[in-house]
Each structure stands twice: as structure tokens, then as C-alpha cells.
Length: 125
Image (cartoon, rainbow, N blue to C red; front, top):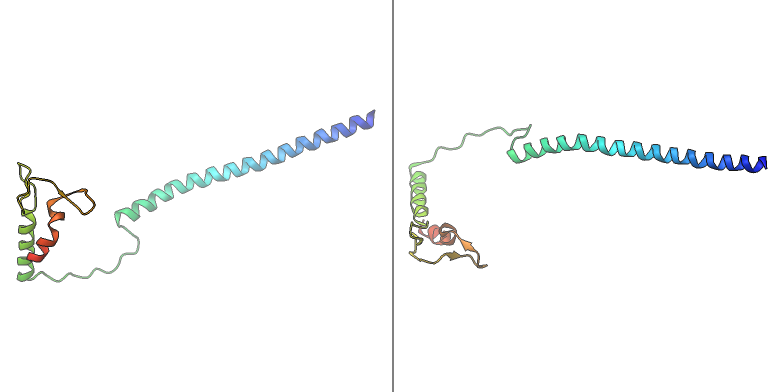
């Protein structure tokens, strides 16, 4: 009888010890996952901020842009004038072609007059 009790006590002890070991391993793994998440979230946020804002630690040397010539300014002014016509007026008509209906792209979605008449504007320049 005492051998049976001893064997039963050993089996229960082994099961309890196995549960403690498995619980400890799972606890340590959970702690590592939470710690990694707590570190990764701020680091990812900072990385995303710098990525989207265009800032970086390594900046290329700045080159001075050439000053626009009188012809460049004239082309820019002409483009601005032509693109200024490609808008809807207060009544809802296109200022470029006078159409009273909304313009659509090749897929049937609504398009702005500027996007719709882009090729015509570029051809006039």
C-alpha cells in the first residue's frame, strides 16, 4: 500500500512540476512578446513619422536650382492662365469647353475639367 501511495505521490509531483515548468515558459514568452510590442510601437511610430514627413538623418548636399529665365516664367504664366480656364463656373459649366455635364474619365468616373482637358492644355503650350 505504501508503494502505491509513493508512486501516486511521485506521479502527482511530476505533473505539478511539469505544469510549473510549462507555465513559467509560457509566462516568459508572453513577457517577451509584450516587451517587444512595447518597444516596437514607438519605434515604428517614429520611423513612420520620418518616412512620411520626408525627413531623414542623411541629407544630400543641396544644389542651387538655376534661376528661371524670362521664357520659363512666360511658359509658367501661360500654363497657369490655361489651367485657370479649366474649372467649373458658378452655374456648373466647364470653363474650357462650356459643357453643362460633368466630365468623366475613361472608366466612367467623374473627372475635374483640368484632368479631363489636360492633353488639350498641353497641346496648346
